[in-house]
Length: 347
Image (cartoon, rainbow, N blue to C red; front, side, top):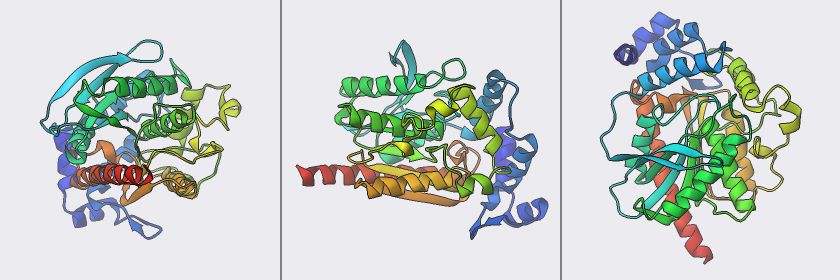
């Protein structure tokens, strides 16, 4: 399957366009040609409302492993760390540089699926190209463990990272959070909660196509409601699994679920906000970056205009997706440098 996906991405762009009905353009953006055939097959398979969380996990864990591809070789260590109510599985990607920052990474998957293995390949790229240690953490998943279980585990993981950074060979003064999709929501929530209740707070937050506000009718949510991997139906289903059938109204304004609804976004960790041009979550990610800037925070941002939601997990099949993850890792490296300079200027 992995070889087939790579072969599809390697088909020349003109042939991919001919086989799939021509290039796809929306709002001045052109969808990455090398992903056209993979998109066409994925659209037929479809990520719609699955029959069960178990079925979805089997399907998506396989897809993520196919998309990850061969591993970049570097040292890793399997760990168990303290969660809110029990031990959490984690994987430490060891940076070759001494006293490098430590990034606590939360995987995506709609709070329903995902683990350290599904996100192994991009975490390796983040470690190597950002020049950081990465601690990839498995938090409790819905529907077995509904909101706010993941938040409790995220907070516990950040505390553990601060307490054990030196033992991991990392700089205890530079512990950050990161995540993609649902994991980016969790990273944003953890960063906000830690800053408000006395920490320990992260020194940076790296948010890759984050979902941040369920209340607003963002234009991109309608524009890309179907046909680009993540569908609006799937988003609704994930949300129902996470909060439960009775939790929609009760959680609408809860900043632990919708960080955009937090009353005060000032004095938060410097942020790198990554969005994708063909993603239903694009607009809320960009709006959150705007809100963080208005509140006086240091913000770096990048939109990969030609890519869809999920590109973070396509590094093994698509050169353009791999290049995008390397670019965002380099942005993260720059963010750490700017954050340190800003902190020194304020000291």
